[in-house]
Length: 277
Image (cartoon, rainbow, N blue to C red; front, side):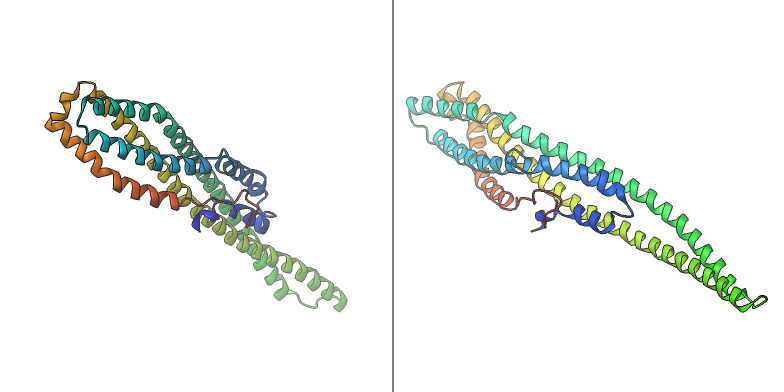
C-alpha cells in the first residue's frame, strides 16, 4: 500500500545517484532513517497510534454503554451507579494518553517538513551548479569542434593526426561531462519527486493520528462534563437541556465508531529502514 513507500525510497536514490551527490547519502538519508526510527518499532509513533486506535475503539464502546446507562436511569441506585461508571471511565482514560501520541506525530510531521525545505534548498543549489558546469562543458564542446574543423595539414601528417586525436579525446571528455550534467539534472528531478511522494503519506497518517487523539479527548471531556452534571443530583435528569445533550451524544457514537474503524484499517506500517524494498 501507499504507506509502505515511506521508508524505502531514499536508499534507492542514494544507490543510483550517490556518486554525484554524496551529501544525499551522508546527510539526508541519515536524517531520514532517524525519522524512521521514531516512526517504527514497538515504541514508535505508528505502533503507538495503532494501540491508540484500538483503545479509542474500546473507549467508544464503554462511552456508549455509559451514556446508555445514564439514559436508562430509573432509580436513585442506578443514578449513583452511573456516576461511578463515568468517574471510572474518566480516571482510566486521561486526556494526556491521547495527546502525547498526537504531539509526537505532529512533531515528526514538522521535522519532516523542515527536512523537506532543507532538501529542496540543497537541490536548488545543485541545479544552479549543474547549469554553470553544463554551460562550461558546452563551451568546451563548441571550441573543440571548431578546433577539429580548423585543423589543416600545415605540418607533417603524423603531427596532424596526433593533434586531431588529442583534440578528439578532449572533445569526448567534454561530451561525456555534458551528458553527465544532463543525467544529474534528471537525478535531481527524481530525488525531488521521491520526497514529494512521501510527504503526503506522513501528512495523511499524522492527520489520522490527530483525529484519534481528538476523539479520545472528546469522549473523556464529555464523560467528565456528564459526571459534573450528575453531581447536581437526580433532578438533572428532568432537565430538557440535559436530555437534548444526552441524546445528541448518543447519536454521535456510531459515526465516531465507523470513522475510527476506517482510519484504523488504513494504518499500514512502513518498512523498518530506508534499505528495505
